[in-house]
Length: 310
Image 1 (cartoon, one colour):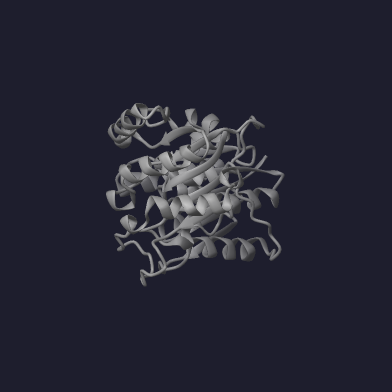
Image 2 (cartoon, one colour; image 1 turned 90 degrees about the vertical axis):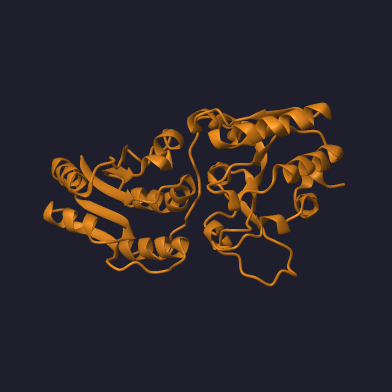
């Protein structure tokens, strides 16, 4: 069977979720092709996309020096004899190696990197590359089960960098506010770096007879069932927010350090920013997470999430 290659080199889980609708559209237009995805190991794509039938094979870019990596890439391209290659970033290397590997059609952003909205850029390019303007980009991570009973609220305490994280005291207060309104099962979503914070939250809330689970010691692949059973996500702009939203979970993301346009690819993500009186645009240099209060978050959830109304 003929093969096509998609290259997405951004490292984050959220990055892969952003590009996933574009990858699905490529597959829809190439049903008689096998689709290979080349990406970074830190994207954890093999773990959360293992049920995605649109992607036939996922490969991670090996950690090698520039020379050895170029040799590996060239051998990889030549061995698989790809008919088409879609490169979702700027640069010379992948384009040149694909070119000398005699890949017939190569689509890529260009050679010079620009400061752009990655969501708008990826979708405009796909429309151009596929020659279709009426594409319906659907953000969905396929999963083997669908549950009618959803009774968990995810609390996303993780994040890449301290500035992206809301304080654990704020999360404790939000859980208390929600629990006073209605009882739910709470799950802390984070990584190994958040194990200590998770234990502290659990200890404090246990004294108040609020039981909280933790996913911080689990692999991404072992968290998908919990995400799929969840009603709601509240938390930092992190991988779990993107995973939850892409599994059709309404997700309230706290944006005090990262631009909100990064979440524009998925309608399930509701962005929460510092109060409107703070006349600043949120960007990567902002340090404004503490301007978002637990009461701000609770009021928004109570207003928009019908299970907490009344």
